[in-house]
Amino acid sequence: MIDFTLTTEQELIRETARDFAEKHLLPGVIERDEASEFPKDQIKEMGELGFMGMMVPEEWGGSGFDTISYVIAIEEIAAVELATSTIMSVNNSLVCQVLLDQGTDKQKNNFLKPLARGDKLGAYSLSEPQSGSDASNMKTYAEKNGDHYIINGTKNWVTSGQNSDFVIFFCLTNKEAGSKGISAFIIEKGTPGLSIGKKENKLGIRASDTCELYFENCKIKENNRIGQEGEGFSIAMKALGGGRIGIAAQALGLSRSALEKAVAYAKEREQFGRSIGQFGAIKNKLADMATNVDASRLLVWQAAHLKDQGKDYIKESSMAKLFASSTAMKAASECVQIHGGYGYMQEYGIERLMRDAKITEIYEGTSEIQRLVIGRDLLK
Ligand code: COS
Image 1: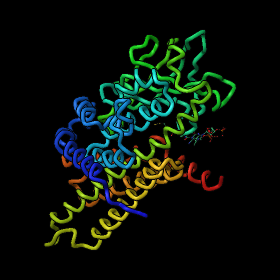
Image 2 (image 1 turned 90 degrees about the vertical axis):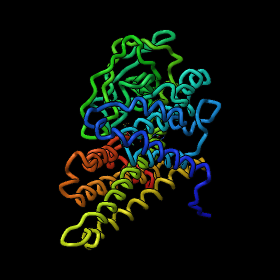
Image 3 (image 1 turned 90 degrees about the horizontal axis):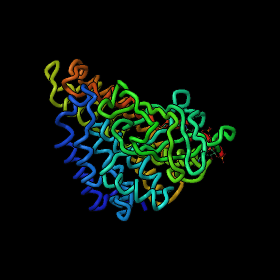
Image 4 (image 1 turned 45 degrees about the vertical axis):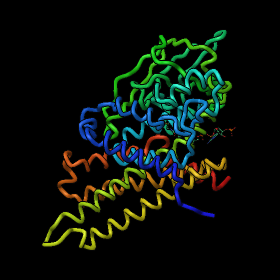
């Protein structure tokens, strides 16, 4: 049976997220983008609403919702401010999920509970200067010494790198074992030997912070390791499988917003004596945008539903991200085109959509990597 009706609880989550986004994110969204200002107060409020640990059971500080509820909330937040939905997505799908799936009870108590409640913020650090798509080609090394590790290396493009309290990171514990030599760790900010790089100046999602992390003889305890030695790459990949559903939902929120703005403008803007929506050229653009937005939502919900059912969803998660991010880029570009000169000017809040959309085709695996994941799955 296929039923697209949302439960009362899911409808309430949508309303709550939409209301929050309109009242607390929309005012100041252009200013935060321009100033690259982190939405600190808003993230705190989202924690109070239960949006920072949505899929974590209540016993571990979360809201105990399903993945469908999560993507609904992400869509609404992203429709107003993609940068804020990025911070939310990383905390939920990457950080909390890894701790929930792999953490010991002690790690869940110390890290998951405050993260899921929104009292603390998490970051996830996989990439390095020389290893982006080729994620296992990392150099950061943790040398075992008794009951602790000494870590040296550089990680980069860490979302919430500056504003987070805890960072889940991946590094080598065995230099000869390839992807089987990678382990996962969690570190608290302020640990001696860990320093935080400058905030990157980005094309889009400027209100979220992205930076490098430097480990210099950084000593952490063995019980900060998540999972067994050598399991890190698999932990990282599994997390990204879920994370990509969140990114697809972000892209969906952005493209829906682009469509809504384009429709409103097409009704109101008059040229040659009639509203521009009366022209076939504009109508065709809107029709394509609307079709792709709905197709994105179906793919996002399919992946989320499979995850909720405990079924394999890796291919479907990559398909959702691939399609929804490409749709976001196209919809944002068409939205600017329909708005013409106004779309190009910062004060109307349209050009930001185009700058923000691009990241959804890059982070948590480029579109090229999503095709690779889908292709491999088809041929396995
Ligand atoms: N879940 C669990 N384990 C997985 C997995 C997944 N989704 N994907 C791969 N693995 C495991 C494999 O099973 C393999 O283990 P075995 O040797 O026991 O079979 C191991 O990890 C290595 O996998 P693989 O050989 O496929 O690794 P590759 O180096 O070919 O890399 C890709 C695979 C390209 C898919 C991976 O590197 C990737 O996703 N890159 C993009 C990284 C990314 O998204 N970065 C963004 C960072 S966050 S902004």
